[in-house]
Image (cartoon, rainbow, N blue to C red; front, side, top):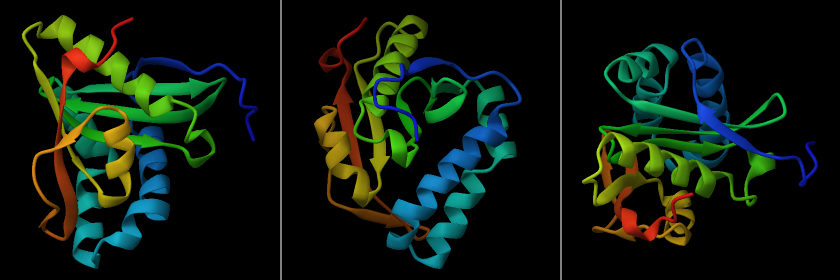
Amino acid sequence: MIPDNTPITCRRAVPGEEKNVIDLVLEVFTEFVAPLFSSEGIAEFRKFACPNALKSRLDDGGLLLVAESGSTLAGAIEIKGNTHVALLFVRPSFQGRGVARTLLQKAVDTCRKQQPDIRNITVNASPNAFSAYQKMGFNPLGKEQEANGIRFIPMTLAVENINSN
């Protein structure tokens, strides 16, 4: 296990890292999210969370940032269209250490540089991540929904509520 004082660094992912990122996403998804989904939802998520689909989204202008502690991948965030969190996953041993918040802040800063008029970032939060998103400043846009077996709560964050570095 990595000591709590090991520095966490964030950077833009480079081409070829898609498999490592998806391995992390699926590890966390399987442990924390999949138990809340139907088999249809799990299959639907796995179609979205695969290396080729991620590479395609990045080729279409998506943003992928990773957090590392030494050589260990601690977490990752994917933003679509500068305004929507498509993936935000943190390895269990790094949860509760501010990794998700740091990734979100760096992603918002990057999106603001690319599109200065951004006012809101949205996410379709899984039920188990709802409170974590609330702690980061997101507010619900409605009640829990389900699409193709995927359960989520639509949420939004006013970007002025994120501190820029």
